[in-house]
Length: 621
Image 1 (cartoon, rainbow, N blue to C red):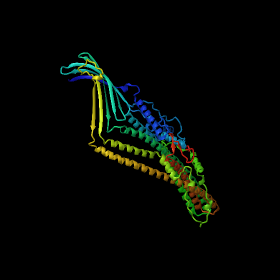
Image 2: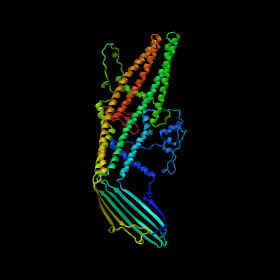
Image 3: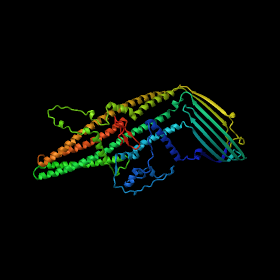
Image 4: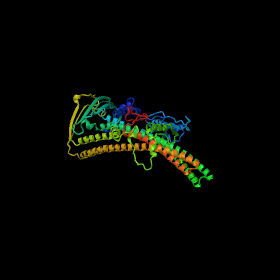
């Protein structure tokens, strides 16, 4: 039978007819599912839930600074996705903010940041921090997709067609319409069984050559049950189990990342202060050397000092100017790098709050006051007294320092990255079980039932109606057996799973050794910086005494200009070293807390330190 016809057909998904199936609805539903999963896994992984959101505000601090300080930017991408011009066929409509260049006149006002403010800004503006949150969110989306494989899947379709044309050699005119609606339900069970059912009806109206009408109802169902290979909940749900554990690992990984991120940010913050303090020290040294060279010139004019010492003083002055200029450039570079790290424009006008450095000094003086004494008796020992070298002892330790064995035990019990490696061993063991299952025979039971008939314009019995009658249904059952006669690929995969298991075990061992090394190095660093604090404090006091004495002796004619120059150089060096030792020790304390796994960081970037031996588990910053 040949058709020469003109037809129009319409297929409409039932979902499109339902309310709330817009792209916005799907995005919001995905967000809700992912956030729910993350909160569940936070509770499971950390024992508590905390705020988690990957949405950036329409106007971030970066945008405000670009606009308020009138900073140059390339295009709207620099302001964020909310400022992008919607391209053609963009699926969601939204109100786009309009940049306002002249809202506030703050271009000449530096943005002064405390450490707490810098951490909060980084938590909301840092691109690296945002990417880490998005990685966890995407893992939650993957888990939601894997869970969907075991949910009831309901789908429906409405089909309509109108036909007008000719049939066969006689060119009989045929016109009519067809309509069909069907809905189906499918489900995969965690034992491997799959079930599918469908019900629907057809409506057919023939207009030419005669008017006939027919309707029919139909339905079918099928089920497949694996009995040997591929059966069992632990085999069927392996992808789901792995996805569940990946989100758990993602929560641990993000929590570990937050500790490292905060530690690095604190180090960067204090590095800027260290650079700024060196600028201050070099500036004071430069002024002192300018004054010293002027004094040397006056003494030379009075015939009290040779010209060679005047030249030496001028050379030191020039060298001091060069070092001062270099230190200013270093400070500005460190400040630019810090701005990038917290997600702000590089050319933003910011300044770090100087009070934070005073707080650091106060912290060091309070916690390590026992270091800041000068042993006058040791300095006055006779030259032939026995020389006894005394290494730093545990009695000099700060409040956050621990014994090496205690610190290592704490780290092994709390490090989340080690917990991930340990979890990978269990994952590898499951992979061995799954690979072993693939070596067995495959036995599957299939059953289906189909009742009712379909209708179309070409049916001969167009004028008859049809209804569902289970007594006239078609019932089918099938049992298939695949004997394990050829399993070369499966055998290779099984052997490879053991290799991957051994590798996972070695990864745990390596991580454990790396943690021990990290902790031991951290203890060494704390010991070194603590000793340096004590040494440099004494060096500063002695250098100050030297400068004062050399200045008086020079005025009295009992010293040469080079004595004052050497004393000032020693004072500069010891001041810079003391500042660096303070910064290094404080950062090493916080890094040790991070390496131990006991540093707590909340969603706003605020950190809490555990103090051994105290009921309070935090120095809340």
